[in-house]
Amino acid sequence: MHTDTERCLRAVQSKDARFDGWFYTAVLTTRIYCRPSCPVVPPKPENMRFYPSAAAAQQAGFRACKRCRPDASPGSPEWNERADLVARAMRLIADGIVDREGVPGLAARLGYSTRQIERQLLAELGAGPLALARAQRAQTARLLVETTALPMAEVAFAAGFASIRTFNETVREVFALSPTELRQRARPGPRAAVPGALALRLPFRQPLNPDNLFGHLAATAVPGVEEWRDGAYRRTLSLPYGHGIVALSPRPDHIDCRLSLTDLRDLAGAIARCRRMLDLDADPEAVDGLLREDPLLAPLVDKAPGRRVPRTVDAEEFAVRAVLGQQVSTAAARTHAGRLVRAHGEPVDDPDGGLSHLFPSAAALAGLDPEQLAMPRTRRATLIGVIAALGSGALQLGIGSDRDAARAQLAALPGIGPWTVECIAMRALGDPDAFTATDLGLRRAAAGLGLPHTPAALVRHSALWRPWRAYAVQYLWATDDHPINHLPINHLPTN
Image (cartoon, rainbow, N blue to C red; front, side, top):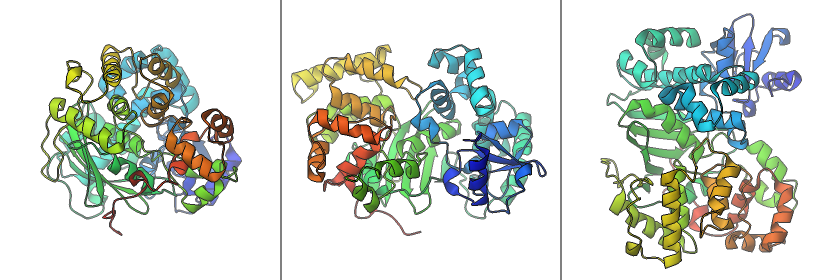
C-alpha cells in the first residue's frame, strides 16, 4: 500500500486508524516516522514519505514518534493473509527465529538461500531480515523498559541484544531517548519487579467481536492447559527458552495481556503467538466488506461485525487435538486431550489458577501406547500416524510452513479427511480461506439461511467469499446456540 501515495495521504489526513500497521509515514522536516492515525497536525504532503515497515523507516534515518508510538501499532494483515515467501519469513521473524538461529536459520526453515531471502524482503519491505529483527528487538526492549523494574543490562539481553552498548545505541537511534529516559517518560503505575511478570496491551483494528473468539477458546479449553477465570482466557505456553502462562481479557479498544515467563527472551515470541491465536492483525473492514456483498450473509455480518478466527499458539498441538475431536462432542474431545496432558504433559506451577501442564509435544507423545486410548481403533491409528509424522518431520506445520504443502502432507495421512485438513489449515496454519464444507454445523447454518447446503454446492457458492471463507465459517457457526459462540457469563470487566 505504501506505493499508493494518494491513498496514504488520505489515510494520514483523516487520521484513519484502520491503516495503522499497513504503512508508516516519515516526515522529512522532523526526521520522525508515525502511524497514519497520529494525532498531531499532518505535515505538508511534499514533506511526507511512506514506508512499508518500521524497519525501513528506521534504516532511512527516521526515529519513532513519541506521541503515537508507531512501534506499538497492530501488525500488517498481509503476513496473516498471504502465504508467499515474504509472508512466511515475516511470521518467522516475529516468532524470533533470526534472534535464535540467525538469517541462515531463517533461510533453512524456508528452503531458500540467505541471498534470496534478503533480496525479496528488501525489495518488498525496504529492509532485510536483520533490520526487521532489530526493529522487533527495539520494540521488545521498550516494553521491558516501560513495564518492568528490571536492570537495563537484563532488559538488553532479554530483548535479544548481544551487548549493552548495542542496546543503548539502538534505543537512542529508534526512540531518540536513552533507556533511562524511556523509563522516566513511561506512564506512572506499578511495574513488575518479579522477572517474567508483565502487563501489556495488545492493539487491534476495530471492530472486534470477542464472543466467538474467546467463547471458542473457553468452550474447548483442555483441562490443565487452558481455563477461563475471572474474565480472562488463561493458558500455558511452551516456548523456545522455557514456558509461560498468559491471561488474555477483551477490552473495548485492546486485549489486556498478563504474561508470566520463565525466561524473558521469550517475550517477543510469546506476544506474536498470542496475537496470532486471537487473529489481532486482521483487517475486519476488508473481511466484512466483502462478505456483506452476499445478501444472504450480510445480515449476519451487520448483526455482529468484526468476528475473528480463533487460532492456536502451537500448530502441532492443534493437529493432535483436531484428531482427538474427530466425530465426537466438544466435551469428549476435551476429555481425551486432558488424559493425554495428565499422562504426558510437562508439569508447571500456576500460583494464580488451575493450570498444571504444558500440552505434550510430538516427541513426548512418541511412546504413546494406543491401547490406552479410549477411542475407536481407526482413530487411534490416525492419532499415532499424525504424531509420528510430526516427530519425523514428514508433516510440517510450523508458522513458516507452506500451506499448500502442509495440506498435501495432511491429506496423505491415513484417517485424515477434508474436515480435519481444513480445520488444521484454518486454526493452525492461519489460512484465511480455509473452508470446512463438510462440517455438519456449517451445513445446517447454510440451510437455515437459504444457502446451498450440500458440500459441493456450498463450495461453489463460497467462491463469493474468497479469500475470506474462514471468516464466513465463523459467521455461519455463530447462528447456532453453542457454547463456542458465547463468552462465559463472568465475561469481562468494563474498564
